Length: 348
Ligand code: ADP
Ligand code: NA
Image (cartoon, rainbow, N blue to C red; front, side, top):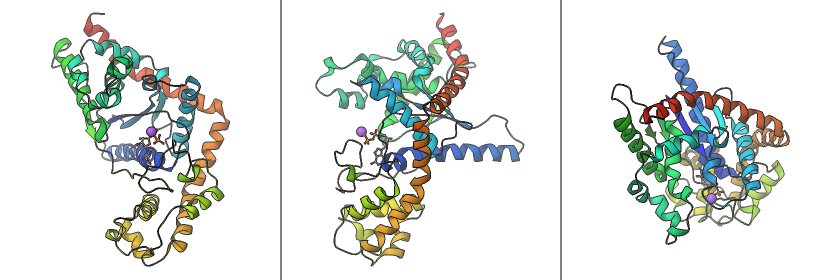
């Protein structure tokens, strides 16, 4: 298996980013490792199962952006990934901009992708809205870059959420048409990647409003737990988190119509690896006076090693630069044969 996945390099990372996105990557990395061990034990294939994780900084320029913020966000996201457990020795971690093959392959695939295919992309329609004429060409062609991102490495599997399924379909269509038009069935240039649906990621809500997603763009810092928050801040935010006056129910159905309570229990469940029902067996019938401190402690226990490492890395710009440079060198190496084969197939 070769899994390739990208993430937008946003800054100001919070618990929602960790539980909703970053932690799944760490799980995938661990699964690859297990696969390698099982293969070795069975004396089987020497092909290494591997994840390639990239920061999608090239994608970020498809919409208006601040260059200084992009640079900062890229470094922060890299530091956060490493702090959360992405191991640059086991996975290839890099940013797109340092691997020119992404942009090159996109151009080469632009000859194969059809306008009609891109016009049908619902994300394009949603993001462009009524103002198509005012959008960048990059926003329109974004899914072709996404295709290049995975085809470049002969990815066998790509984790996709609901909103990305259509783009992976497009990547497969592009790969198939290219193989048909410019390669033989015996020697295709591109592997058609299969989707893997990531394990149900927790959707974490604001601590101040159970109907809003926890987000970096919420003006209230009390609405979110940041990856850099210290123990006191975490305990304070949990204590002040909005709740209702009822005690916790003893079964999950009892949380219907109680979004704030549901959110806190969901966070506890995600951090402890236990189900909501199991947690309610323990805390059902109790008020938040008992549950909140337990949740706060669990958050501190989970996040403090992450935030310590994260802060250390942010203070050591050279260390992050070195990690990304090394990952980019590995990625360039892995990309070379496919890029060369693409040029050759096209008569270039
Ligand atoms: P924000 O909403 O803070 O701007 P982004 O949109 O930059 O966050 O999201 C980065 C990643 O983190 C995405 O994969 C997104 O799905 C995930 N994510 C962001 N907020 C949450 C949340 N509240 N719960 C779960 N996942 C989240
Ligand atoms: Na966002």
